[in-house]
Image (cartoon, rainbow over the protein chains, first blue to last red):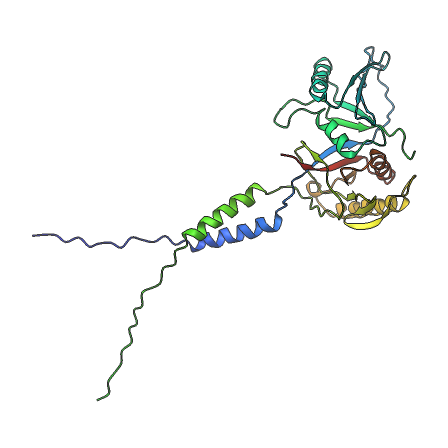
Length: 155
Length: 158
């Protein structure tokens, strides 16, 4: 005797709840979407403070980057005996290598003073800043605290 | 004898094929998730302002936003304040920034520690071709209003 099996109809998944939640999620994302990715570059006002600590015997790094009209960059280090090195706007890799060397010699320093000619365009300045920082994927940091020298304000 | 007309009641339900719709939704979802920015700063750029591009990837934070466009017109939180003078301090900007700082301080008193906004911070947006001299003057005016931290808002370049 044959035993007849009942043919089961394939069960259908109920997609209605998941579709509801996906729709809500899409609306939320559409409302909060920013189609231009904006990021920030930080800087701070130079602060003066009185220090009661003994003055360092070691010459402080006092790293200063001066950007001139032709986008040439002059890197000056040292306070007592300043040393300068000039880089053209095409020499960004060399500039970064030099800054890495300075960081290796002065690992505690993380401040960089930026002085620019008033005629330097903002984009050029941002490019200089980008080239003085480590790549975005790198965990190492160079001189990430940027202080703008306000010499020449209102001139 | 009355003849009864019986209507067929057991209509079969119509199955709509939603596979293609689901495909579209999934693509849209992935695209939106990729372009999602967790920043709490909502930036509406004013006219005639092209942002500078940068490799920076630090996420922006909420603070008053000062925008200066190609024509040196200054906007604070999307409200036009005026035009930068040829030289010297822009007192209107300093005053407006002081008011914004006072407002922030007042709203901060009602918030818990974690939700407080940094009162020392100001976001600056400049046109990419703007001279550094103007950038410096706006920074100086912001400093006079009591802000000690500046963030330049830039466009990510890929």
